[in-house]
Length: 249
Image 1 (cartoon, rainbow, N blue to C red):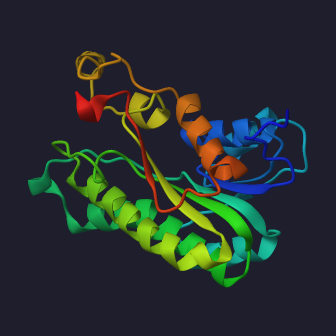
Image 2: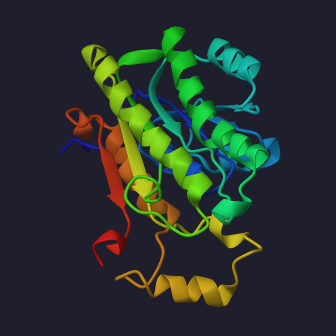
């Protein structure tokens, strides 16, 4: 039987490929037969990811995607894509009354403007094939729930979902699918390296989840693989919540 989740013959670009969900998605996509284009600001760690991929004609592009000229250079350097995964992003926990304009502009630039403008650039340059799949990384925060200290982060993720739904409608005529993945907390460096959250606070927060744990990156990557594969050819404009039951508890 043919594997319905196969990505054989597909060229997939993954941003945020140096770590976390982006790295894991790139690895799993390569194992499913895809040719990967890795994109991240951290060239050293992205090179590590490149070495973890299954064999193939993979490539990488180191760039700050908040800079418009880098979007143009990236688009000019690649062959047309069958999949685009916008994983690059940052977190920022700060009480609303302390949220400054500079912090808001920075997180919006990275989490919203960069992925949306990258997608737009690739579409304009005809670097997204008919029948391709575009996946954005959102979050339950801003799309389903809200949490104290997350007003700016949640705003970026809510904006992503709003844009995805309209993009899906506009690109449907070309068979291009556009979807969101909205995880709850995931065991990635974004969580592990936060200096303002103690191990005790993390453990207490896990108790709020029916499954008493956070997701592993692989558990999110497999949902992204589904959206990239031909198994999901009738799925577009969706927001796939992956939260271990958190939002129904």
